[in-house]
Image (tube, rainbow, N blue to C red; front, side, top):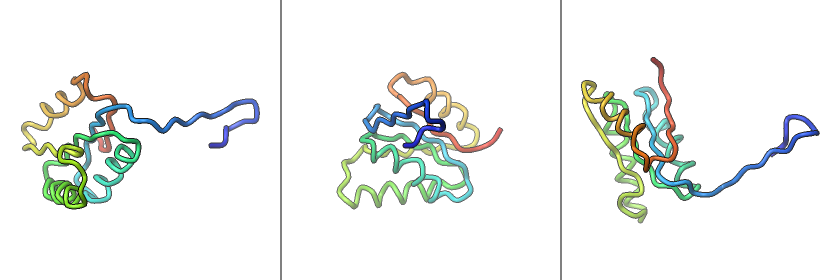
Length: 108
């Protein structure tokens, strides 16, 4: 990775950090889910995914496809919920000390 200026150096470490939580929006559900979990899995991390309330079936289908490939059960865990419970799930993911990284795409 090239540094922005010659007097600096960039360092990239590719190592697992632990559980990655990912929260995805409703638009482009397959693209958003894969964009979140692929880097985590490539780095050796497991993932807890909370898809948008409007599009949970896409995430569940991708989870099933991943397991069909022979990936260990529990490598990616999808947590679905209603809109009324979304904040509770988000709080749980953000507040759990076992979650070492959070990836979020959305707006307020």
